[in-house]
Length: 625
Image 1 (cartoon, rainbow, N blue to C red):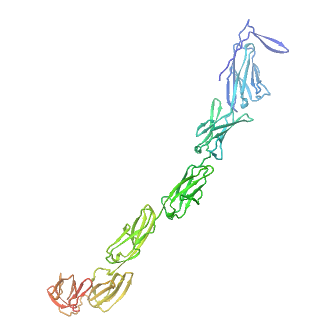
Image 2: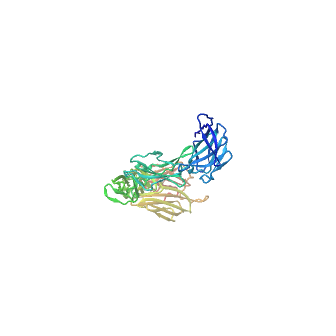
Image 3: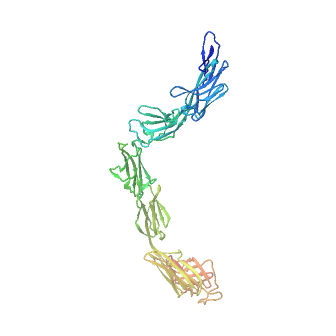
């Protein structure tokens, strides 16, 4: 603020008494002047907030010390006239009554002048205040200060239009309003889009402002933004800013940001498979979703490309297909049309339903093989995807690939073979098929040896078992020589096996033969049981023999038409006067010469012969049987 000074010069003065009052007359004469001067200093402008206290300084100085002085404060009224509000002289200070400032002001003398203090400043106090100084002959003058009062506004408060605004409107449409309330001086409002100021533009942006003033002299400013929206404005943010004056500065206050609802036509339709995730297989439930880019969303309809006239049932942009099959594969369409979208927009997606048919196994169901034969089985399943085939038997993997080759069949080859066809990329796609293999052939003994040699105490009960396998299932019969007391105590059968158990009371050396027979052939197993006596006892001998000998080897001489044939025994048991020899013969023989150590004799024997050509000769006292 600048300070102004005023100077006044007077030539002489005189006093005149009239009607009991003194008054001062100032006569200036250019002929004989005695110089007099007063300087007054005041701020041009004083700024305060409403409600605060304002102190207006009036400083003065005289070039000649006055004998008489008076100071008066005036304010300029709304009508333009001046109203005195205070008077003071060298002895008195008085605040004028009956003015709007009575009771709100006081005047105090200070160093070099006076101070007018206004308490609780009001908006109406914004006006000019005059300080008039009269020093009579010493000079007189006046100066003024403009008091400026400020009140920051409330807000700004922004409110968007709640309804949607269509991009098809040709003229700018109101999108939001902004209000700054109870401010002084009048605040200004500026609009922003994405923090960029908006200026009035023909056909694009209009700003309509309404200003009202309250009874308390405060201003309320309401601004409406009219704007021609585009589709891009759906993501835009609008705000308003109020700028206002404060003592010594300009401040701004910004509203919150708001978005607006923009209505625009659909130009693109997106179609996709919502579930299941990944590949679709037969039996799945499929959801196809459709979404347009328009707002508000236009009604959506579904159809298949090959049947455009058939509308499929859908709900809220979702098409649900239950338990799909390969026939549901194809191109699906979604169509959009509405008030904002006069032209139909179509989207497409392709649905592929994958399948895996039931496995077909050749040979079907069951197949009969003979022992030693070979068989090739195949397993195939039609699928839209790559498959893998694995063969199982009794839960264990026995082969891979579409073909299974069974070679040189045995009874163990028989059973159920299961082929499992799976899709590696879709593990839950699986199908199986099976074939039952039946192997037929002559009976087989469970143990491979056809001859078993035993020693047991005479009088003991001996259990002998025989297990045979074959298809057809064989029948087991027993032939027992030597002991007359025996019986079959168990006989169990399954589909292709038979188990027989006999109990023999051993009274003498015994030969037991198990015969397994069927329509496919027979097989024999023999037991040679030597009956022993308790230690210290002897058995009666029918023939004299030399002391027992246990040679490392024995020879058997079999007489034939061309002479004896020497066969080294495969097994030799020598005890007392007996020797048991096991050997192979091609046919039954009636005589043999045996050599045990240094003894050699010729006896008549009958040689038993089983299916494997295993012969048995008993040499010794009981060999004549």
